[in-house]
Length: 196
Image 1 (cartoon, rainbow, N blue to C red):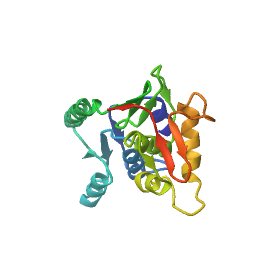
Image 2 (cartoon, rainbow, N blue to C red; image 1 turned 90 degrees about the vertical axis):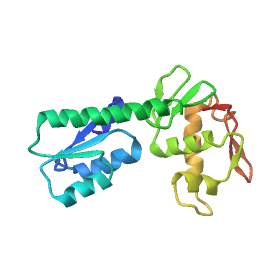
Image 3 (cartoon, rainbow, N blue to C red; image 1 turned 90 degrees about the horizontal axis):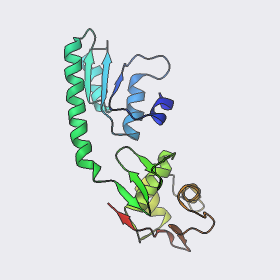
C-alpha cells in the first residue's frame, strides 16, 4: 500500500480491518497521519466497539459485511462529494515560493517544473513550518515544538540533518543556501518570498 500511495493520487481508500500483515486499523491510523483522504472501513467486524474504534482512529465511514452495493456506492459518493468540496475550499491554500509549490493538504512538494519531489514526513513538516514563518528566525526549539521532528537536547542535530536534506532538494547550491539560511546562534531563516 505504501508503494501505491507514494506513486499515485487516490480519491478514496477502502480498508478491511482484517488484512494479512498490518491490520486495517493500523493502516487507517498511518494514512490519516500522512494525508487527508476519505477512508471507508469495509469489514465483517460489526460490533459497536469495532465501529467506534475505526471512526475514532480516522475512518470517515464504516460499513459492515454483508452490505448492499447500492448503499456502498452512495456512501462512497457522499465521501467524495465532501472531499471534493473541502479540496476546492483548500486549493487556494497552496503555498508558493520561488517557483516551488507546497500542498499542505496532499502533503506534496512540486518543483518549478511542477514535478513532484519526494520528501519524508519530517522534511515536509519542517518545510511547511518555514513556509508559514517566512523572514522569521526559528530556533531549533521552536522548530521541534512545531513539527515533532525530534526530541530537543543540547546536542540534538535532528533539525540540522533535516534542514540539510531540504536544502539538497530546494537550493540550487545547497552548500551556499539562499532560501533556507543558517543564523549563527539563532536557528534558521526561510528567506523566500512566500505566497499563499
